[in-house]
Length: 169
Image (cartoon, rainbow, N blue to C red; front, side):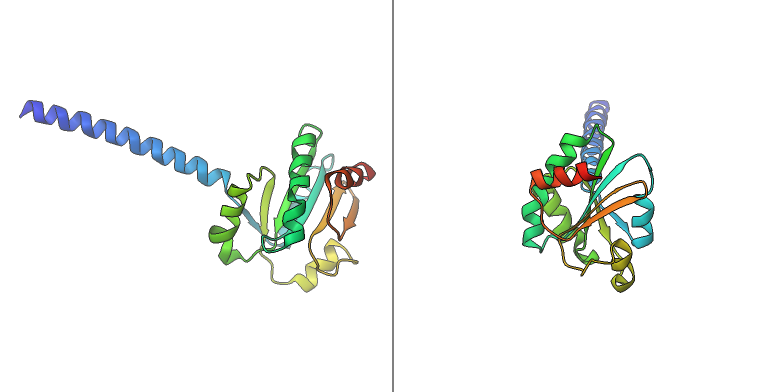
């Protein structure tokens, strides 16, 4: 009986250890594919956190082919300028109901390292002109902001074009 209890105790101890490791792995995976969900007010706050930082904000969606084609340029910029007080933020305009089914798998599949947020604000007629008076609402669209200076682009970018736009701010 003591032997059986010992075997069960050892088995239970190893089982719990494995579950803990599995739970930790799931938490790390969940954190790495976490998506911030913001309304426009949250977006404004996010790009005003640090007046000395340059924010490169790309509005995109998983269903937008030109957006997908330019994402590698933003990822390359994120990597090249991460130590130069530049933050790349990818603002997804996908549907909130598709975060788990489409957006998170897309980010994981494409190994997106940049900060990803989902814009969840149905009042686009109010916030689009606040981003830029010239924005028609088409994507991709990009804002480069440092302090009170902001430049808006309603276009696709190559890496070279994006880097040149960053230097203009």
